[in-house]
Amino acid sequence: MQEEEIKSIVLHSLKQIAPDTKPEQLGWEENMREALNIDSFDALQFIVALSEKLDIDIPEKDYGHTATMKSLMAYLKKKKQV
Image 1 (cartoon, rainbow, N blue to C red):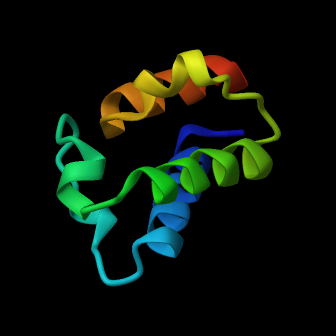
Image 2 (cartoon, rainbow, N blue to C red; image 1 turned 30 degrees about the horizontal axis):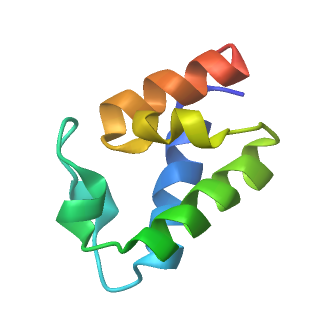
Image 3 (cartoon, one colour; image 1 turned 135 degrees about the vertical axis):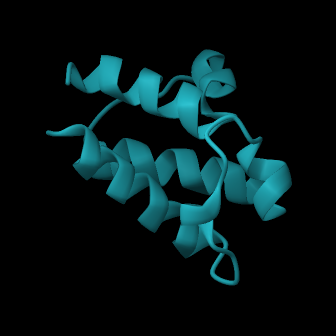
């Protein structure tokens, strides 16, 4: 899976949990939850969706890697070995 595919899945998943937002306009180091006004329940749904769509395990201890697009993409690329 290529980096662009992963990014597309991330953006699509964000759009599903925050439909009135524009996740594609997020800054690379901007806190996604704050920028998109995502509550903790929606954040968990986002992580579960990524786990399912990318067929990876994201344990609770790694949730800190999902705060920014930069940290999330680095984490997902490592998990998918892109």
